[in-house]
Image (cartoon, rainbow, N blue to C red; front, top):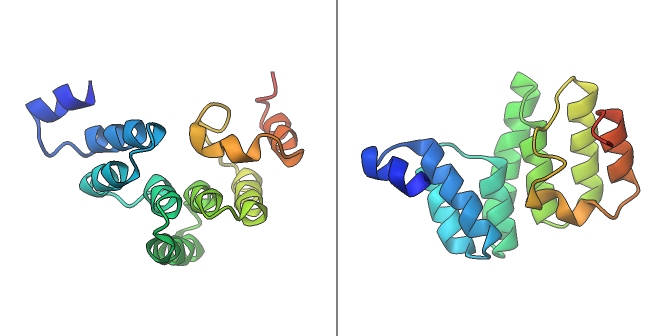
Length: 136
């Protein structure tokens, strides 16, 4: 469907983002990175893909940018958590997820997205889902 959207509009950013998710799920990290970048919006998914591809310097630069933006706008905690998951820094990932929840945010994909898989076996994860009412 994303490719069809790009056939109709080759500049449609959300379609590139969707392709990035598909490529990342298939382990095609460089293609995922390219698609995320072509979406026109830096995201936690891009930072996660950088980290998973071993491009930690780029992941950390995005992380720094996201954290600076967060301190100005108070938004983006979920994206920051995604990058920390990619860097395998799960304690910081949980800190940012907790911050997001405390500030009233709710990640729509927390229960289903692959990016959160490394956190699922941690006892903090089901507690976080319960706090959000997603434990059913």
